[in-house]
Length: 54
Image (cartoon, rainbow, N blue to C red; front, top):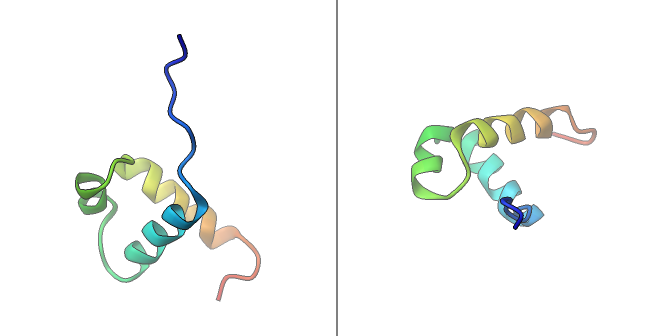
């Protein structure tokens, strides 16, 4: 039986990125939501590298 979780929806990931950019820490968000602090931090770094970011 596979031991993985389906990917989070894009809107949920965008909301986490915006929360980090507004001043919340990945650790704080990790306690409130399910993703780990490291995965949230990685997503923020990835979002910063995407073209079209203001």
